[in-house]
Length: 132
Image 1: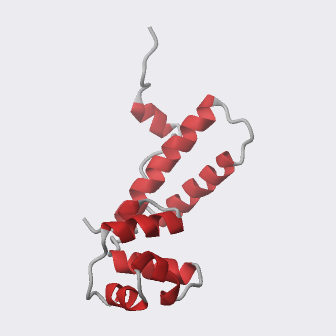
Image 2 (image 1 turned 30 degrees about the vertical axis):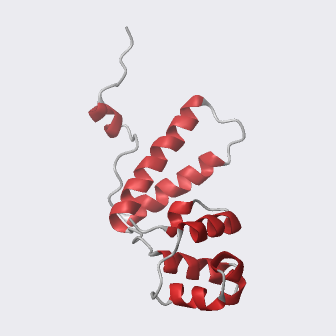
């Protein structure tokens, strides 16, 4: 009967991937992941390695470089900037320039209808515009 997990200590001693502790290790793991992602027809072992490296990279980045949650107005400001849009360009989603301005200045909450329209316009999930 085959063992599901070989001796983990021996695996680490042989150079198997381990938890990332430094930015230098992060850079090395990221480079390895990019290299593997360029393989045209990856073997099952290569796919497994990509998954493992992805998990290790994500864990380190979440601990050392967390992304703070954004409020809905911050998300809309970011989308305006990234798409070279002005507030007036969102009148179809908000109904008026005043409504856009009031929302962006924190004087008005976003409605579910506005969330739906923004989600459709920018092709992103509605949760991006909701604060939990």
